[in-house]
Structure formats: C-alpha cells, structure tokens
Image 1 (tube, one colour):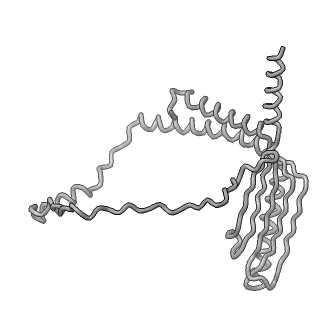
Image 2 (cartoon, rainbow, N blue to C red):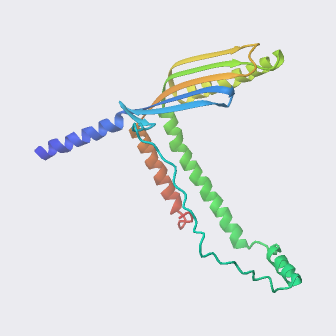
Length: 235
C-alpha cells in the first residue's frame, strides 16, 4: 500500500512538472538603425530562471596563455624542387591544377537522387506538423510594439510610416490567427524631425513543458520512421 502512495505521488509530481508553463520574455529596442539594436531574452520555468544563467560574483575569465614555440633546434627546410628544372616544375603544376574531366552521371545515381528528394519531402512534411501544433499551443500574455518612423525628408518619412504599418499589423494579425493573445498594445507614429525609424518590441508568452516534450517526441518518431522506411538512407 505504501508503494502505491509513493508511486502515485511521483506520477502527480511528474504531471505537475509537465503541466507548469515555461514563460518567455522577448524585448528589442533599435538604436542607430531599425535592425540594429539591443535584444533581450529571459526564460522562466515557474519561479526558476533558466536563461540567461546567473554568473557568480568574483569570477573572472582570464585569457588563455599562448604557448611560446621553441626557438632552438630549428633546422633549415630543404627545398625538394631546387634540383628540378623549372620546365618540369611548370608541367607538374599544370597537371595538379588541371580540372577533372566531366563524366556523365549514371542512371542509378539519378534514380537514387530522386528517391532521396522524395524521402526528404516526406520528412519535411512530417516535421512541419508538430511545429505547427507547438505554435498553436503558445499563449501570448502581452504584446507591445511602439514604432516611430522617420526619414531624411517628409516623403521618406511617409514611406517608412506606410511600410511600418503594413509590416507590423500583418505580423500582429498572423500572431492572432496562430496563437491566443490576451493583451496587445500597438502604437505607430511618424516624427517628421526624426532622421531614423525607432522600434520597441516587448513580447511575453507561455508554453507548457509537456507540450514541448510531446511534440519533440513526434519529431523524433517522424525522423526515425522516414529514416528506416526505405533502408535507412539518411542513417
């Protein structure tokens, strides 16, 4: 009876661990250019910080010491081509650098290549499905995007403003179709005195650990199935 209690407690703890979500926070802020800035990624599992790992205080990494090469007992290297005439040396160089003759590919090689392409297509198709399921299980807690478009003149600023509206609203619409979103804040403006476009992104989402492990198992099983389906050509 005690064994059943212990076994049930272990199963309950494992189920709770798989049920708990992994919280991820992504932040980005452009500095000089739109695609050049500071990015930050923080991952929490329950109350435990997984990434980035905390560094211990007082630990410094010293650069590795370079090993000095011994200067003694160095003998001059003999030139093997010193006694060979220059004409023979040029002929040998031409023989080495001559391109190989092009031969026609055999039919067996082409047939095996077509078979490999078919297997690769099946493998990619079986991988996309679990990845799509993972995206569908992601829950976006909050999304904040602030974009201030700028440019050298009024025409370029207006053009950048239109491009930012198209790109950002299309991205948000795609996220809302693929994932569940609780809260979002989108602000796009144009600053006629700003010479460059500034972007700020703050995305917080959660995903259960059990979902990740389940879909990872699906990926492994799909790879093994396609690997040994026709004699293990990828192994």
